Length: 314
Ligand SMILES: NC(=O)C1=CN([C@@H]2O[C@H](COP(=O)(O)OP(=O)(O)OC[C@H]3O[C@@H](n4cnc5c(N)ncnc54)[C@H](O)[C@@H]3O)[C@@H](O)[C@H]2O)C=CC1
Ligand SMILES: O=C(CO)COP(=O)(O)O
Image 1 (tube, rainbow, N blue to C red):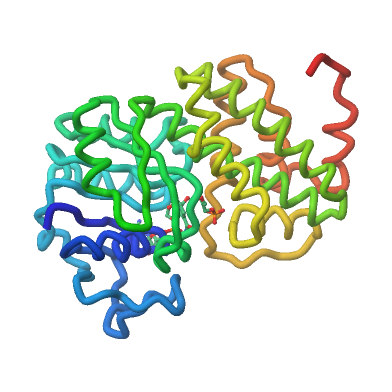
Image 2 (cartoon, rainbow, N blue to C red):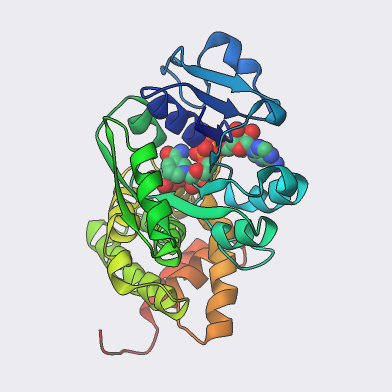
């Protein structure tokens, strides 16, 4: 098998289902008891195709290309444990977040742990269920090495999954990580009953924050305007399929939210708040989301914190 997927959550499983339309694919997960039923409970209603083998044994996987589809905050631990086994391969990060422990993105974590690996990023607007059902989806494949980018683009494109490529790894990865924070804020605005106009302001000013931080971290501006930035921001701030948006809805409405759900934007907001302070960049929406997620700020004070800031040029 030339491609395998590491991480059998909703996204890893969906990518494996899509790739299995082109050939044999292995999917590694730490809990794979569900695979006997050929259906992942995180992707209800999606039958696993025959060409997809699920395994809990990493040593059974020998692919040159691995898609790493683990949540951003657990990736560091996984890399530490398995760096020797991973190193030297083509490693494609599929997580959307910033590591709280190091304040770096997943691709930098991978490069540090696996210096001989070719590191890439697969990101963009895509709900796992849409990909698994074969609905048309466009993503960004980023790799600093243009030849490797082209090879991965070809290998990972399927009949319903169209990949665009870029060499701007930082830009592509930051777009996917930062939009989750803004999706929480957009959800909170709707959950609190502030209305669609307020949401549009949050999305637009949130996009300005994303661009400010991404530029300071070396991203190209045009990358943020593409699928991995604006594209994913639009999707995640407008759909209740998004867990980040739903978490924001619950925060805004003062409702509890299901424990154990992967909500990357909460930890990423905390990481971004620290990063922005280090860089001297204003990121009021991200700071607010960090405060809400940590319980430092109550929702009833959130609006005043944004509206009472000094007036400024757009
Ligand atoms: N679900 C979606 O629609 C999309 C998800 N993503 C990204 O993919 C990443 C993964 O998200 P999902 O698959 O949706 O999450 P998920 O919550 O469905 O699955 C997470 C998986 O990680 C596994 N896991 C947790 N800790 C682990 C550890 N220490 N070692 C090994 N495995 C561990 C869990 O067993 C579970 O299978 C996130 O960064 C997310 O932003 C990206 C695009 C779409
Ligand atoms: O990244 C995603 C869509 O592109 C999935 O969003 P959530 O993690 O908010 O569900």
